[in-house]
Image 1 (cartoon, rainbow, N blue to C red):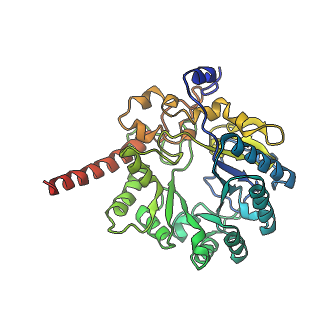
Image 2: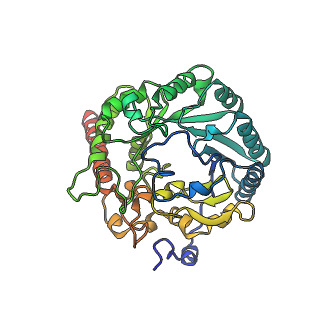
Image 3: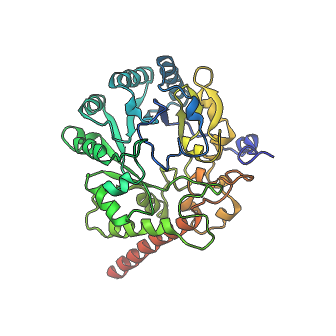
Amino acid sequence: MPEWPLTLDLAALAASGWRPTPFRQFILKIHSRCDLACTYCYMYEMADQSWRSQPLRMAPDVVTAVAARIAEHVRAHDLPSVELILHGGEPLLVSPEEIERLVGTVRDAVEADVAVTAQTNGVRLDRTYLSLFDRLGIGVGVSLDGDRQAHDRSRTTADGRGSYHKVAAGLRLLAEPPFERLFRGLLCIVDLRNDPTETYRALLGFGPPTIDFLLPHGTWAQPPPGLGRDDGATPYADWLIEIFDQWYAAPARPANVRLFDEIIYLLVGGASASEQIGLSPTAMVVVETDGTIEQSDILKSAYEGAPLTGLHVSRDSFDDALRLPGIAARQIGWDALSDTCRACEVARVCGGGHYAHRYRPGSGFRNPSVYCADLLRLITHVANTIKRDLMALQKDFR
């Protein structure tokens, strides 16, 4: 029997007045391999192993087709701007000359502002790449898991050598003029073995404008480290709360922490801009090196073929992807939640958690997140902290 969302009735959704949200973020897998072998990587270490059959690089004819399809989508929906994210694998395995041609091809084709960001592991980040990014206005996000010990625990080369020293060198260059304007932030995977306070301070040491703490990807079939026991423990919430309390109490916050900012914004009635929480429609799509159009590549953590759409930029439009149940499921918000989630007091903030983390064989993605208990504890803690301060302010004004 098909798992949800394959049973989603798109005709009924359309009849009810729902319309898909156009894509505004295009993630291009410009290189399918990586020069690191991170132990938690959803691309190479989890259920889907389709990377093995992908070409190494995105060929020029595929780039041209992608650019034409983005331009088509922009015209069809009258979009004033879109975002291009250079991803992999590791995007800096592609030469500076190839990156310049790719970005130029897309910008020449698209009649809208095209903001470009490269998400890199930082190992190859040097003056040559940074000079190119400075000239083209390409933002840079870097993955870093804390200090040397924390980072090298999981982010090593295939032969086990640590990568921290190279990443740190790249980040020091990124902090120098004129490159500092390119720095978009640090991405850190939560590792329960690493001390949260030490991790947070190590990240702040590089002066990031934003820190993204991401929960390691997992599902009910393959729970993340430390989960899978029905003992009421919330290790990930506990880890994040230790950082939140320091971040929130700081007289001048040295960096935005995206997860905390999003939770606070949602608690006061705002809309989310992250896949991790909230009910905002997802407006991103992935193009693999061979030109196949896919859903979020994080779905590779669920099962073999989970992100597949059957579409290709040479013959299919991005609007064709918008008409697929898997894409619609990540855009319908409340209607995609399980009954358990809808009955929860923090449902509109949590939003069921990351879509990929809801997967359970047999019922598909219509389940609470495998991080359900952690999300409830974290959001409740943030809400109680804000409520306490608002009540104190109210007393001051009496």
